[in-house]
Image 1: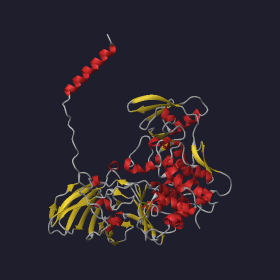
Image 2: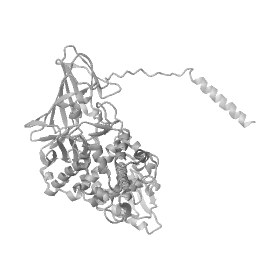
Image 3: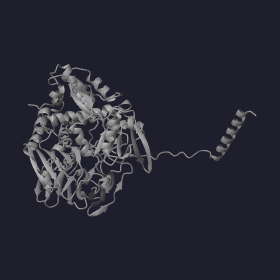
Image 4: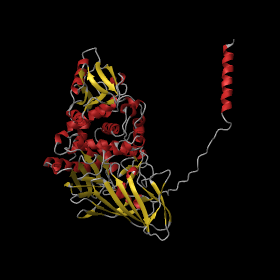
Length: 640
């Protein structure tokens, strides 16, 4: 019998039977029509001043209570918005899930509200005839455990972000919405903000401003407070869980004063009338680093002053956030600026906003003496090595990582070295080091990135509005300093797919990346603070103190052995796991053909793995090229 014929007949029979079971004309719905009922923002003044009163006294349960009075000009439909796209977060991260107890009244009567079915941050109401204002009551329920989100209220310290405790009317630029705010803090608390205020005991009345500036002017308050004047118009407002953490030495204070002095000399202008570091040293509330025009929210763990020698890494926070007053707040990417907090942001220029700020943070920490030059060089080495070891640039370019705040919103990733994660920060730093080296080389040493800083950020002294820019503006400013195809160069750096990191600028500026079997002091501090053994360059894995693998380099030796995040190392050879035993085994394998043998557990399954790594322990360092001061030495030197 013809086998092909039988197969064809069988297929035909099956097809006919299938067709017989399917009704003719499958259901094929059409989408419901959608009409956006949220008014577009217009650059016109809102008719009246909003009054916002916040009660921040319930520190025991972490509850902020707010009462808001919004004038209305006419009856009919109105839309109220909860801030969604937050500057500095670069993503729709407004904590709408923590908004509760929302009641809206007019003329003493409740008004029904309806949440928009598409934009859940929008609330539709119908203002009744005769109403001249609406009254809003709501609570913001702060996280009481870290897994609920950022903890912002503790028994002795709190952080208040106005966007969390207020709604605003749709249809207007936020800069056109006047608002006056008051806060009642717990008895015994002091409070600080970039927005001027008058205090009457625990009650603070803040200067009437517009809603954009209010949201840009958060507060920090607490029982233990020490204001430190760094200049006539800059204050380090230091709050802590206890008085002991506020102890400072004259040398520590002087280093912070030099930070302000060096930043102003570098950028050539100040984009604030007063500036406040809202600095919290706390375990009660979470850490933070968030920039504003006239302040920054800065949160670190206890020990910043009292364990100074062990807190080198933490001292990059203030230089970074302070630099943002110029880069990101005053000068802002044109596609990132939005007229209100409901319009989506586009993050394509974060390699300037965050990348160059990351660059300046490390430069200013060194110029000020907050961090020694050697520690900064060691930190640079770690940044260079991490990108040189990660293969993700082969498939994903730098500019695409500017989408990460929207894509992942800093959720944990299992394969960071292959997925990438907001690399516009540190790879952006490497690009700007390269730019500095090219400026020096092509000008014969007469120009540097300091010339760019003054040209791009050093205008309109005192202006804390926003001056936007495009990619072409960046390239044109560089070209005005040293003629070159800067647009072509930057496009290449932003879109290239390459192995290794863009570290040529360091070599051009007098330093090269090398590896030795001894970690730097900075590297060891990082391991200690994170409670890990960082073996990224010694087989391609990171392990915490209990043997849990927290990082694996894609396609490295550990990866090829089948290890991943979530696996636990229970034994090294025939001995129970410890960091020292793992490092000893890696060292032994350098002079042996035997792999590093591990027993690991994944869930309830145990197995033996062999990591075929024979290069021993490797830690990154920077090695000076030549003699005398190179470009990097000159870059890190204080400005007279």
